[in-house]
Length: 75
Length: 186
Image 1 (cartoon, rainbow over the protein chains, first blue to last red):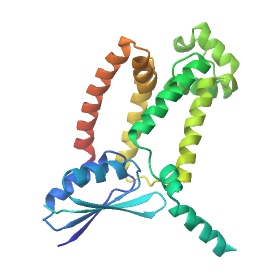
Image 2 (image 1 turned 60 degrees about the horizontal axis):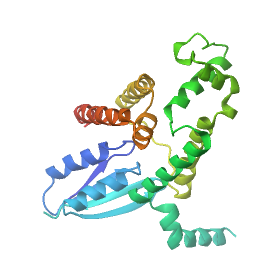
Image 3 (image 1 turned 135 degrees about the vertical axis):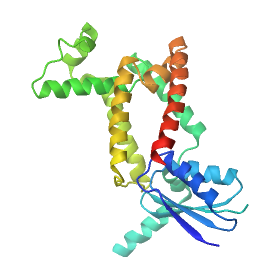
């Protein structure tokens, strides 16, 4: 069980999504991936993809215009 | 006093209507309906279908003129219509007002959602890609006499075949673009 931070600040769509998709493949079941984003459209497509793949997802607003998408690799 | 202010904004932040209208993004369907509605309004009021990028060419021409240049001999601005638009100036150009509205509206929306942030430039690669991409989009939009709004959206919504031709090309371009993006940006 580890927590991995993925810094996607300053990256525009669809870079955060593709980075998150690549990163989660390297993780083990039970690991948590935290995607840091500041592009509001990534706040839509990253959680959408993760939920569709059946992972547990939470979005947290950490600052003005900054979010963390917390994805638990459940399977 | 400062405490009162903080309490007020805390209340606003959790207000159901603020969250729904100001904070969260509208669903795609709502946005699509609003776009359709406003493009009908724009066609009715200005007599021209909605377009965005053509205006930037005029902005460029006005800036060029302001610093002493002349575009009178340029093929792109040679038509009497284009010359008349240039003559009337930005204040009498509905498309300019609409673009200014889009920019200020987007700023207002992000401020209301308290999501405004000046983003850091992460790498030189980003700068290079943005400059090349911007030049290609701007140049391509002028060659095609329209961008994804003027040629694609307004084309299809006025039942023009050219809109569909643009759509197919746009799709092919998007596929190539995403392949390049994944290759060079991941």
